[in-house]
Length: 202
Picture (cartoon, rainbow, N blue to C red):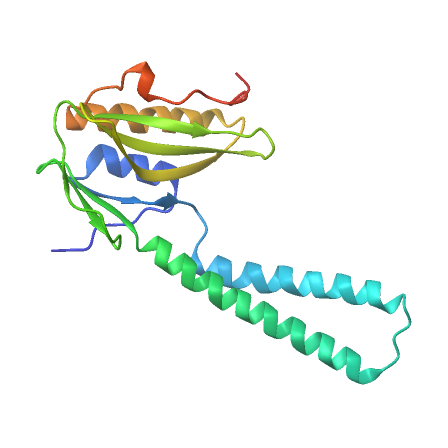
C-alpha cells in the first residue's frame, strides 16, 4: 500500500480531506520543514552570539583565551540545541492519526496509550480556539467529541495568522467537509470552549 501523503500546508491538507479516502492528521500542522529548522536555529544562535560578543566588547575584555571559551561554548550550545530540536521535530512529525473515510476509523500512529477509534453517528467535531491576543497567531485544535460520553480527543493543532480571511475560510471548510464526509454532528454549544479575543478582524 502506498504511503499516505503528509501535507505541510493548511490548503493542501484541506484539499486532501476533501478528496482522499485516507488522510494523515498530524498532531501539529505547521509549514516548517526539517531543513528549515536546521538552518533557522544555527542562524539565530549565531546572531545571539554576535550580539553578546558586541556587548562583552564594551567591557574591553582582552584575554584571548576567554574569547576562545566564549565562542566554543556558544557554538557547542547552538549545535546541541539544533540537534535536540531536530529530534523533537522528527518525533512530533511522526505522531498523528490516519483517518480512513471508508472504514470510519481513526488509527493512532506513534502515540502510546491511544487506540483506534471507530467513528459513530453520535460523535461530533469542532474547533477549539486558543487566543491570548498577545501574538500574531491563533491556535485551533480539531477536537473529536465522543458523545454521549464526556471524552474529547484532540486530533490536530493548526496555527494561523490573525486577520487572515483565507485561513479562516479554510478552517471552516475543513470542519464542514469532515462532518459531511463522515456523517458526524456539530457539537452542542456546551461542548465548545468560548473564543478569547477578536479573530480575523471580526
